[in-house]
Image (cartoon, rainbow, N blue to C red; front, side, top):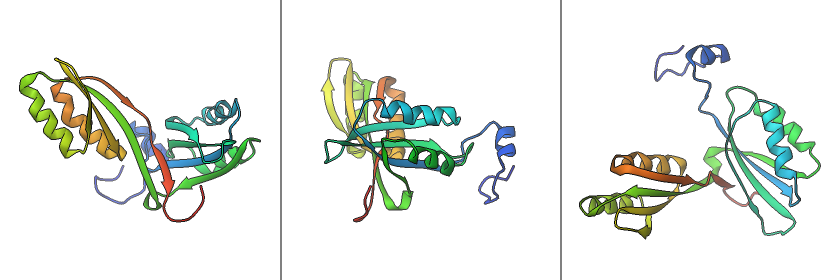
Length: 185
């Protein structure tokens, strides 16, 4: 396996031998579908049958009540993503699929953190929240709930900063993403 910081590509065999099957090449798929029951089940089933683990999955309405957008993130290390996208196109209720390029995409995630915070720790926690442009949405005598919105890296960085305070509970939405510029999807 290549040395750290080298640009040598790793083969699937080398990834399996190292126990690290994540390639680092995250695919964010934006899928427009008809807003009908069972569509999400068929999409998730297709990925499961192909051996993909879905990292995040969000679904929401679009400006058209008859169409929903599925934003799905997967790691492309184990299987090529193009085969599964071709099979997605064959599903009756799938209208359009786009594998969003990170450089041409705006992606965000929302997370709620319930953090243990008594009087002495609260000031420091509020400073960290302010640095990350978070928002305190609930306060009790023993805990604080903070909302953080941003890139996945920002959410993970906030988590690592507040974990020492005592992370009681955390909930993340998964990524939503949209292509930059005037292009569709």
